[in-house]
Image 1 (cartoon, rainbow, N blue to C red):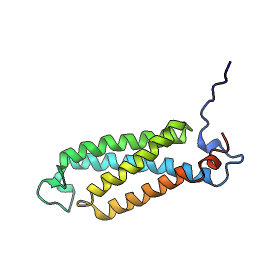
Image 2 (cartoon, rainbow, N blue to C red; image 1 turned 90 degrees about the vertical axis):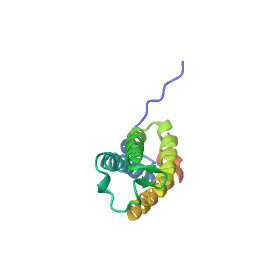
Image 3 (cartoon, one colour; image 1 turned 90 degrees about the horizontal axis):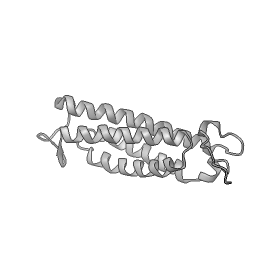
Length: 144
């Protein structure tokens, strides 16, 4: 009979996990926060086209604001879900979080026309999240 391993929340991994656990917890929290902000940003794009200051007509690079609003709301929910799964200690969430952060960089690149400073900040946070989830992962997990 094999023993099923129960996910251990990252916040509870203290023995042998060192400082890298903090980086992973940071990554999970940032995914949830940025996901929440993307949901708000998406709702703003859906509900009020004039909210975005920098515009060129009704399009935001390749789509109108309503399309971007839907994309950002859905994407924000995926980001928040990945962050919550990562903080719960699920192994699948690490892979999902890395993919989410990488795709987020592409989405924010496409969103540069509306908010360039915001997009650059989110891209930088995504880079930090990917670093936190790839560098010394075994040490962060405490050998589990």
